Amino acid sequence: MSVNRSVKFIRSGSKNHSPKVGIILGSGLGSFSDGVENARTFSYNDLPGFPQVSVAGHAGQLILGNVIETEVAVLQGRAHYYEHGQADVMKIPVQTLVELGCETLVLTNAAGSLVEDATPGSIMLLKDHINFTGVSPLFGESENSRFVDMVNAYDPTLRQKIRSIADEKNINIHEGVYIWFCGPSFETPAEIQAAKSLGADAVGMSTVPEVILARYFGLKVVALSIITNMAAGMSDLALSHEQTMENADHAAKDLELLLTEFLGTYLH
Ligand code: HPA
Image (cartoon, rainbow, N blue to C red; front, side, top):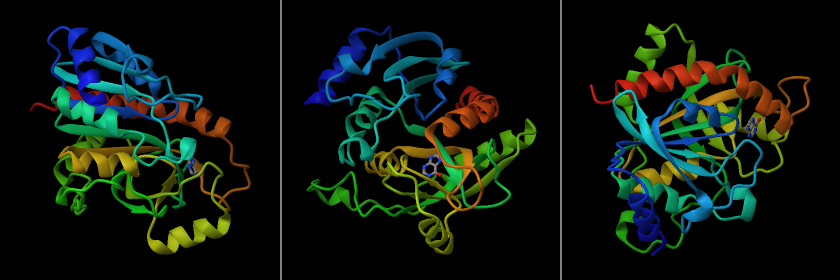
């Protein structure tokens, strides 16, 4: 199986790394991995079952190392459902994190905001999601374990920890519900109106399938969005991937600080 081969390859090329926390870095957030100490880097190209990463801002490498005293495994770059129409495209990478020993998965992404207060450049901690695509990364699984309980999928204790760190460090964060649209076109204003009435606070094209996979494999989950734009119809600015990347840069510093504190004190 691909996952066994990937894990074997990673183990043979790393020195006793035993990561406790996995991190998936979204668009424009790749620079967080520069702060990982004692880093050992693997290209996705060398890891069987890992996806090709085609979106600008996604590097396609796995980095093992530590942030302060916590051992981490950083997935720098993700593949999305919209790239090839496969909802389980991140299954092997997530399963690899589990096999390497991770117990928690931290996900980051770029998202559009549906609430006026959460302006571009701000951070939103996710407390729940709405899967608006009708697809699942667990299609085709046959065991009863596929019926995953999604209550408290976004770990309440770890969310509290993120909120305390944000308070302490004076980082303003919002908390809300993320809705997954399949993309790659941005949403229409009518879709955003519908999403608002369903209770969504942020919108994006990733993360939800990875959260489902993480819960399937028993990982605890924390997810943070960088708000890069107001969602379709909420501002006069045209939506573009370039705008997403530019605004991701602005909030990246705050998010990096938040993540460093979270990871650095994870074991306490
Ligand atoms: N919609 C979907 N995905 C996104 C957006 C958006 O407005 N912004 C960043 N990723």
